[in-house]
Image 1 (tube, one colour):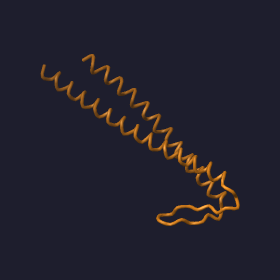
Image 2 (tube, helix red, strand yellow):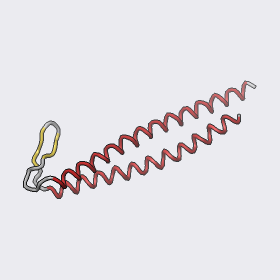
Image 3 (cartoon, helix red, strand yellow):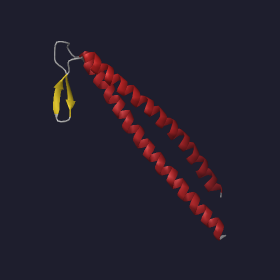
Image 4 (cartoon, helix red, strand yellow):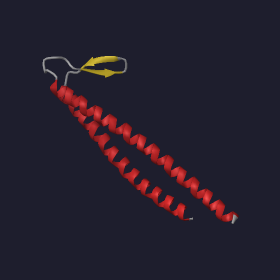
Length: 111
């Protein structure tokens, strides 16, 4: 009976570990999703900006005037795309770990 209790405790610890990993992944997904959305808003705002008006970019504590808007827009779109690719990988991992968590929880409940 003591051995069974030890194995149940280990399983409970494993389930808790998986649950923590899921929470971390969900937080990362939320953060990356927000960053991607911000890039999208920035690209949209840039496209609506009057071409005669200057555009500035923040670099540390200073603002620098942008001389090549097309280059800036391309850079912003590439950054958004990279974030979306990363987001896709995080979502896939979250789904995989969630399935593992559900399987472990069912197995633990049956024990």
